[in-house]
Length: 248
Ligand code: ADP
Ligand code: MG
Ligand code: MG
Image (cartoon, rainbow, N blue to C red; front, side, top):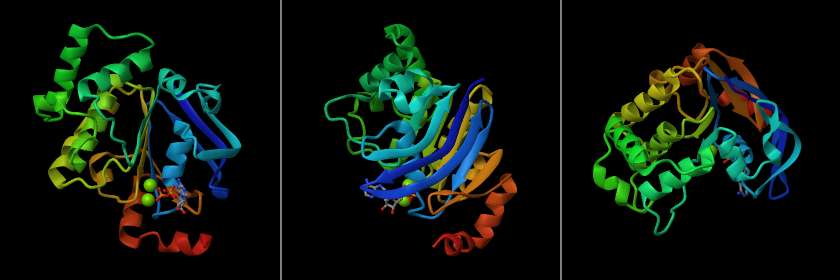
């Protein structure tokens, strides 16, 4: 199995230091939840791992199976087995879901999948997520509802089968039914046991469906507490106030 290692990661955005030394190791078969208040830098962590140009690494390392992710192009990161679902997915004008996904699979594998096999896998993935077949011909994220965006993310997971998946606010904007479908998708995906999942969220409710092995509280650009699933229950009851006061 694979291991993602984040070591003393420091990141600035627009000359402001946001991440102030993040340490975290995610191994295949483990699900880690990062929870924290708005503005604590959770998405900054996801974007930095993704290689977004606006986020400047000022210190530390991110390693995937010992290889330096931060030195890789975005395509190389995908090929190395990293998957990132972003909090604000962008529209891809004129590109259908089907073509987008086939390109993503091609980028991740380094070769194009056979069209017939791909169509079969796509249909199976869409059926599992209760996605209507017409969805495959729509343009990526154009007019997607919150639920469709998230289902599209999980569909990518199922097709790409990454080694490490980073999911940022996959639960935001979902009604209870969509949350259940999306959670079942994540659970199906991690049942293989060969993938590490880093689930970033502000709310505890998705963690009722997707049970994390580890919970990390994020505040002021670093991890300030770690525990098991019981920590999520404590946060649900008490909120983040204790942590935001300590780092303000
Ligand atoms: P979270 O995901 O925990 O809500 P973010 O990582 O989105 O937190 O934001 C952390 C801090 O970094 C916030 O103060 C935010 O305003 C700032 N920030 C994030 N991205 C940008 C950006 N592209 N430009 C300027 N400031 C940013
Ligand atoms: Mg936010
Ligand atoms: Mg965020």
